[in-house]
Length: 130
Image (cartoon, rainbow, N blue to C red; front, side, top):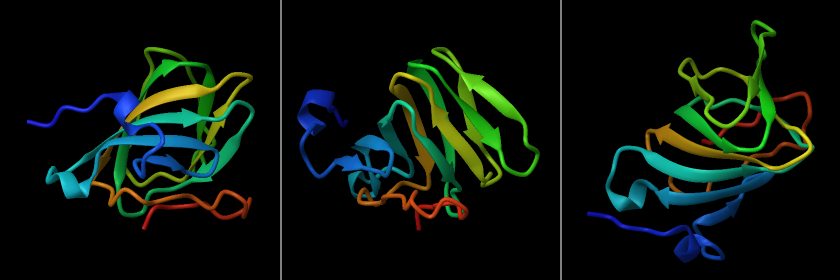
C-alpha cells in the first residue's frame, strides 16, 4: 500500500515545474504501478499547446476555471470543478487557465518517470512527454 500526502511532495523532486504550472506527482513509474497520479496546477492566464504521444491522460478539475481545445476539430470545452476530460487518442490540445489557477487531478498511462517537463515556449509545436 502506498500512502502520500501533498505536504510530503511539495518542495521535493516530485514537485515538478512542468512548463506553465506545477505537477505534484503522487505516483510515478518507480512506485511500481502502471499509471501516474498527479495534482496539477495550471498557472492563471497561461495557454499551453500539449500532446501526449506516448501517454493517455485523464484530468478531473477540482478548482479554478479554464478550457481545453482540440487542435484537430477546433472544439473547445469549458473546464470548471466537476469536469473531467480524457485525452484518449493522444489528442493535441490547448489547455488554458483563466484568471485563477486551474487545479486538476490527472492520471497518466503508462506511468511517468517523474521528471518529465514541457517546452511550452515553442508556441506553434505541441509539447509532449517522451
